[in-house]
Length: 190
Image 1 (tube, rainbow, N blue to C red):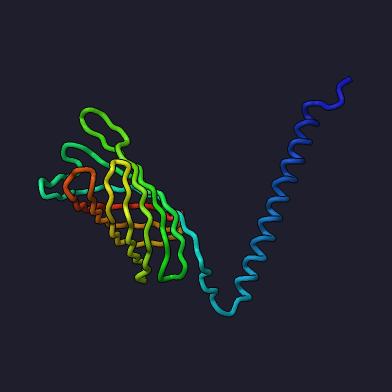
Image 2: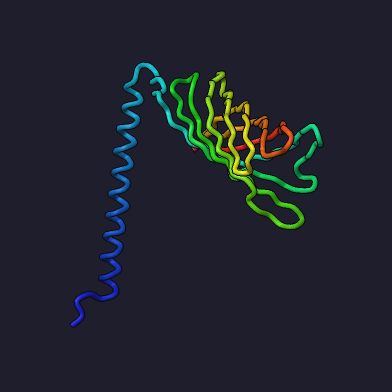
């Protein structure tokens, strides 16, 4: 004996589907009500809470590298790109600490490979109006080390926060000449 027909099974399915949609709608409206009522009840704006943790990821393009032996430009005989990922811990709106890791990929006519990994801790200084200065130490798996001053600008939109940065890496070591690079970095704050 068949307990459920195909028609009754579909009606049970639609009943539970409508019940789930109705329940979600009630939760959404309740949450919206309490959120709006708490915003309306506030008489003065809430200050940002510190310490504040922010994460980011981006794309780095080293544009030109200078040394006492030569000047090398990216996009000429090879293409180098980095993918910085980091965590910023802001103590206040003026000072913070950052840890960044950057895998660097190099592609030329013979192929492509990840040829370097950069560990990049540093201190952040808020300059106001979305500008930040980062003073970073640099330790590379290629055997190079140095420092990187970075000027950063954050743009806040409805869809999130994005940034443009100009890193200026200075590197030493591994039996190579000292180098100075000008780079351009784009990214998103998570």
